[in-house]
Length: 419
Image (spheres, rainbow, N blue to C red):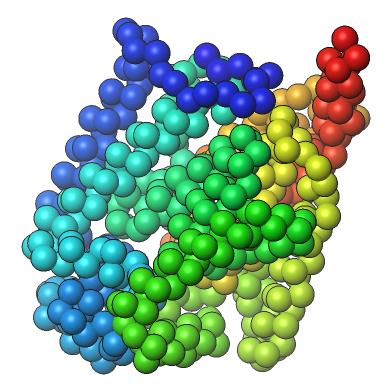
């Protein structure tokens, strides 16, 4: 079992006939069956992967410069599917280029291939992160919680790369635990296919003046920028910028994703004040609140590089980066499972002022996140924006936990040094 006192654990798995191994084996069977069942299902054409497939097809056919032409997307979409998804492809150009080999496969085969890849990432993350996540202590309970978190299942079914984004946050976390800031920045940059979340997280490190981290992030960003240029050219990149501007200024448009269906600051403010203020006022309020939240976390992170305080600060940073993202759906909660496990471990610490109240608040937020019917009901009722206050409460609770644990953590370090 993982040692919660170890600052830099080494990922490992003990092979043998035990509950952890049986849990992983059962998980592998479950995920394999889920992918096969979904690929053969009648609704597979309506999954989000169909949009990814359209983007990959356009680039594969050498029409990358027109990737964000709505008319072309409709034409390709209607030629591929009988009952197409009404949304549009809005992911960055480099993603369409990297996934373009899938366009050479029939749609269902491509969906199944991508699904098996995501299932492998899911299983690997369960194993890789276990030494860093001491709660729950039982391996079977730990594995089970991975399958009770609905956004992961939604990401797998929809064919979204959110599990890959979770893996990138995990790599960033483990590199920071090893105090490899350059490597952490390089890893985070790989998540720019979800730039609306990755950029706010990088902004926290900009406010903290972590230049090695930002240097690594810039290198990866440059590489992915060059791939985008190869995929669509300068004209395509300008078209993408205009497309994003259109999406940002039309939060009521279901084809771009309605604002009330997004659990972000933007979605929450739009749902509450969208009828009273214009787009400019909305964007100004959202920008101010987002910058305030990210700046507050950066100011409180201080010098914690390891231990429970660092874990809780990282968890708060993940939650804040999602809150500050303008475009977010259910599957985009996926990185939160790392933050939730870190919050559960930090919130279980005792001997700090108000720890019982803090632990209760953290547990309540975790119960909401792990209660899978919430996501489906809120989506059905078009009120997923109500998850925004829960995310904010979790982030603030993690900040308080780091503040309370910090002095005790430092006292333990001083005690060890003196001894």
